[in-house]
Image (cartoon, rainbow over the protein chains, first blue to last red):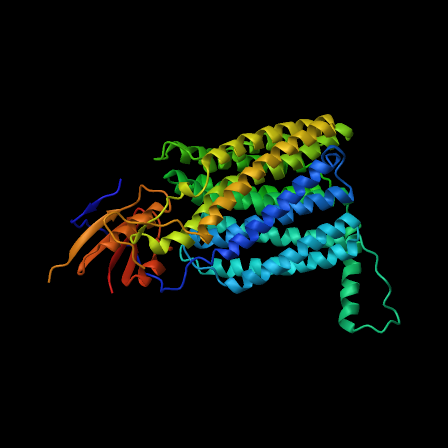
Length: 476
Length: 74
């Protein structure tokens, strides 16, 4: 409870940190918002595409349209929002300043051009152009990784959030390199013998040819699955785990209950993912063992989050936190499905292929997207409120955070998303285009609710709703 | 000269309420009085806003991991 007392209390300072100068600690809200709005447009496009072509969910996933759709979802939606939110959250979570906002703005351009081009070229199955656009995206990702790495070097007190962030940056790097290597392996290269090309180009082509030859040693589908796990577990799951160790206690007024357990969850996730990546790539039966290590890591994480929630001082959970916690609960069926698919003697038939589709769908839309939607309802209102109203606090009456959006729409969106997940999941397993389409239509209702709420929130940035404080005349 | 203190404890509030309550408190902070702000985390978003409003601030981490920030008129 708030207390203003004309008394002093004895404190024992451990460290003294002078307050920062007037330079902002967090970047301009337009930086994360650019990525977030781009991500939402990509998600709307992806959902529209699935409504138009539900067979993208109900047929085996190794074809150009599904790979294009997957990259639209993963790079266009998930990556865009995660990168934007990271630029906003990392300075808060690590209590430091972002190294360079200019680099982040440059990355936005590379990211946008890169993923749009990649999706388009995957659709036309022009792997050489996929490689070119992937390199542009990779250049942007390099700026992101460099920017975050330099930010991490500023951290005065290393903690589990920083460890998780550093780990996710390493996995992101590996994921992009793996993706570009797969693309290099699918290209044919013209001979440069006798051609008038610069030596640098000749060396580059020779390098790509060698990479292509190296990648031809691996099974194409195994390489694709290994690459997907690097991205979905290494980047997104690791970031969700790390950042939630800061945000869940912050939003529920609780504390981390066992730092050793939290640290162990991250260490196990790293170890399990390394083993899973190699064993999936090499088609080794050990992928089941490493899959179990990943499940153990997520179990440890769930245990810690449950303890944090149990110790919380805020009894009621808002719908943003509920969505996030529901997404974490979906890790349980996802882990079970992963364990089934990693079973070495699993027969390879049509149903197994549908289980793989369900696994990917549940990972991308059940776990990651639901977690993001929950957190967006915390992050976007805060960004808008901070930008619009923090300069006026104490001078005018300003709206509360909850007044910026409709909780009613958020609640409807939560239930339509779960309904859509269940229906689309059933459609995938039954190979029914009709059921899958109905499920995705339900998902699109959630996006409509989200879009209305985001528009309501952003309307405050464009037209602030200030009123005079009681007993004070309005002044500038 | 004796220094007067006001203590504001916002550790039990979810963001952005700690920021709101602090800025509301400094709006009526008399000259010569120091506000001692107790927060769960380092109030990183607060510093620039305080400086714009003509206040200086200094944060100290406490043994329990919380922060004590002293705020006074420049």
